[in-house]
Amino acid sequence: MKSNSEEKYRVDCENNYHGDCAICLNKIVLQETALVKSCEHAYCVTCILRWATYKKESTCPQCKHPFEFLHIHRSLDGR
Image 1 (cartoon, rainbow, N blue to C red):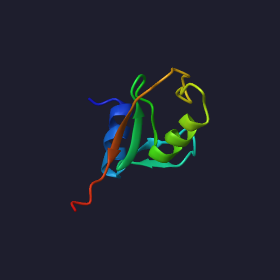
Image 2: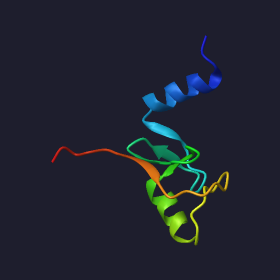
Image 3: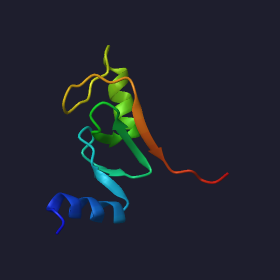
Image 4: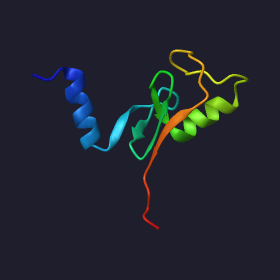
């Protein structure tokens, strides 16, 4: 039997989004998802990049863990 979080993740993926961005509070579109490498919190690519430019040392907005890298998921148009 799947837990509620596993079921929610499956439904979210089927609806083409990856949860809610803690910065802008909108749904994160899967094709524009950025994961903070150190803690795996997900944000909109533009939100977390903007957040990182305002700080001397980039930290995760949720857990304050410092980071230098992001995992970015972008859709490719095939051109």
